[in-house]
Every structure is written in structure tokens, then in C-alpha cells.
Length: 75
Image (cartoon, rainbow, N blue to C red; front, side):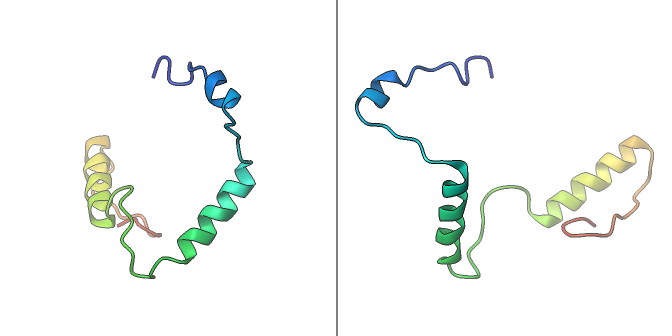
């Protein structure tokens, strides 16, 4: 991650680059997302089944056994 934020945007800013506020970006992103069909598949993150599998493996490795946590996305 070294250098991830070490960039010079002065040329882009001199050419007219502007920045939006975080609240504006979030508001507009949520508005855009609301226009997508309800059955749209998101591609980020783990599928709930894979998350449950990994959590169970982690609990076994930690010695807590195959316990279940009740809540959204957990099994």
C-alpha cells in the first residue's frame, strides 16, 4: 500500500478537475442504485454461503466449534 495516496493531481486540477463532497457522492450513488432492477446481483463481497463456510472454518480453527451466529449473512 506504500504510495497509494502519494500522487500529484495538480495537472488534473489545473485542467479543471473538481471534487464532489462525500454527502453528494453518497446521495447520488444511492439515487442511481435505486434505479437498478430489484433483482440486480451485486458483485462485491462474499456470497452468504461462502461467508458462512469461512466463519465456520475460522471458529473450528479458533477452537470454538461449529457454533452458529444468528443475524444477517451469518450461519
